Image (tube, rainbow over the protein chains, first blue to last red):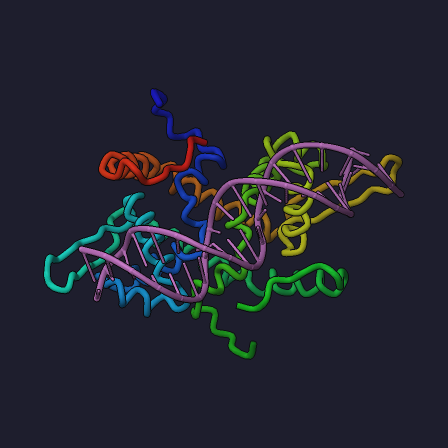
Length: 130
Length: 130
DNA sequence: CCGAATCCGACAGGATACTG
DNA sequence: CAGTATCCTGTCGGATTCGG
C-alpha cells in the first residue's frame, strides 16, 4: 500500500471498490436516496418494492461501511433513523445515471439480440421478465 | 412495448439489460477484448487470469447472446475461433472506463471508510484483499 | 419504529474429466 | 484447439421470528 499511483486501475480494483454494483439491492437503494433528501427506514422499504427487512438492513450497513450513505439516529421513543447520501454517494449516483442511460440507449439492441439467440437456440434458459 | 419514451428508466430496466455487470467474469473478459482486436479462446483464458474453462465459455455465450461480442469460427483442423467486440460491446467498454475511473478516484475514500468501520465494529466480516 | 437472529433454498461458480 | 458434462461448495437472499 506504499504505491500512490492511482493510474493503475485493473478490473480487480474495480470489483474491490465497487462490489456493491454486483449485489441485488444497493443500486435501487441508492437510486431511491438519490431522488430526494433524507429517508427513514420504513420509507426506504416502501420506496424499494420487494426488498426484505433483512436485505434492506444489510444493504444499508454495507453502503454506510463504504462511506456512500450516512446514518443519523435521533434518540426519540420510538427510535428514528434517517439515511442520506454522502458526497461520495452522490457522485456515485451520477455514474449510475450514466449506466442507466447506456441501458436505455441499448436496450432494444440487447433485447433483439437475445430474441435472435432464443430463436436459434431453443433450449438455452432465459431470465424471466422484470 | 408501444411506449417510445426512453426517459423512463427504472433500476429494474438497468438490471435487465446490464445484468452482466453483476457476474464475476463479464467485465474482465470485456476489458481483455477491449484492449485490442480479436482474441482466440486460449488467449482469453491466458489474458483473464483465474477464469476456468467453464466460466469462460458461459461468459462468452452470454455476452454473445446479448450482442456485445461476436464469435467467428474458422473450419480449420483443429478448429479456430475468434472473439471480438461488437459496436454495442465497444460502446459498453467506454462506459466501463467511466466506472473504472470512478473506482480509482474514490478508492481511497472507500477504503478509509471501511477501515474506520472495521475499527468501530471489530466483529463484522470483511472481504479479503484482491 | 428499527432492527438482529436464525433457518433454509437456489444458484453462481470452482475443480475435474472427457470429446470432436 | 475449443469446448461439454458432471459434481460439489459457498454465498446471496427470502421468510420468519424475536428484541430494544
